[in-house]
Image (cartoon, rainbow, N blue to C red; front, side, top):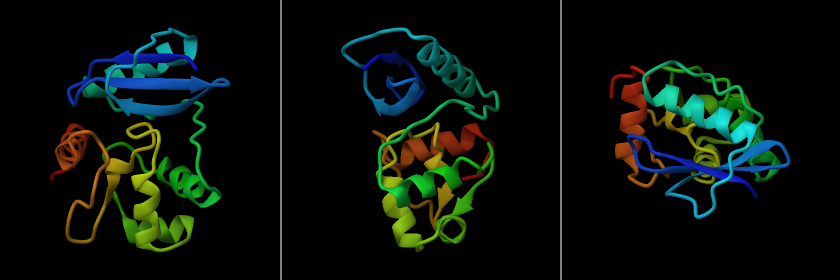
Length: 148
């Protein structure tokens, strides 16, 4: 499986590709590095994003998960740069409950590209599975101009 890593303000990130689609974005530097056209394009988009340029991440993504999780992640891809949505609002769009949406967010294999950092609790930030937890979520939201 081809992988390509990049430096970011929230630490090193590694993109993984399988069968022509991004399947994972992990914190840390990958052992094997292989530039493919898709991974290079995704790396460039992420670098522009971290430079403060709004980015829609129009990339082929193929996260592995249950049908429900995939529905939640797909609905989440519609939340634009600089916007947020609550767990309850996302549940109305994708089905389930705020709690089940939270479970889907915790298992998101492609964070940032599937922007789970844009999902907030009613009275709090919620959680974040990034290496630095809520610090990463706050950073990403501030980068997009969301007051935290």
